[in-house]
Image (tube, rainbow, N blue to C red; front, side):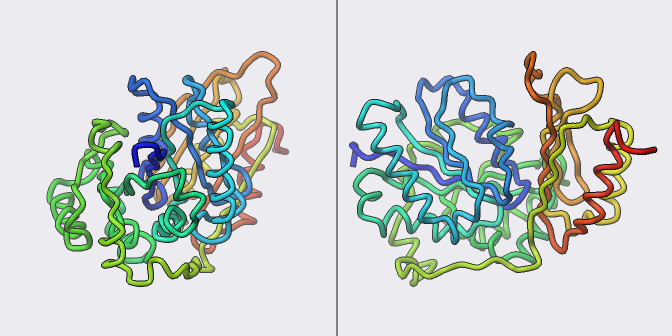
Length: 328
């Protein structure tokens, strides 16, 4: 098995902090080259813009469906293409990290590494890592089967945002996670900081334990998402007025925060020389400065909203009204 390429599946519900953790892994001084396969729910992927690619990682984005159902064939194709290019000397990498959408059930993704013989010859599923948002996990676990499945299938549970949640709440959450998955170690992560020895080269995924959790694990059964959950993408080249956008986002979070599972964006903001990266979960919003726009580069904004019964028309009209060239 030493000749196999180790694969880490990074999962977790919407907004839990998967991309932050992945960014941290890519920038650690581990001396390894990592191929990353990202799956985003929406027509336009933006996490690959958020990830700073200083070490020439191979990043492949799958954004035409969810990795656990409609694009599993694409996952197989990408894995085999990466292996082929590695054998040909076109790419140099030692491991693969697959980051799923927040709505992905992990079992069908893990199936890929056992049911496809060509993939199984090349790759070893090392571990399934699940990031759990301490602020919103209770609500997510109650409402979404995917969130419960992500916890149940994890080899490591990485609890994020514990600095924002009250200690008794975190303790109670740990107890609930332990009931859902007593075998997975629970580790608190702060802005993605975690020892690499805790998450890589674990050789932790056990097919026997997977079968105990789900006797139909190798049956190849399908997976469907709730139809009320969808993604809305907004793109525009005009710059945003920062004051108008801030007011609109605050009102949006107040009125629709309960149904906004996840929203994030890379923004062109008037008066800023760098991108503004913002991310939100329900009513919690944060933003930070991203990479500086290069000379001659086409500036544009991409925002993705994932939620329940999204008010698409209101989002479209509201965001357009926040552009600097919007009619007054």
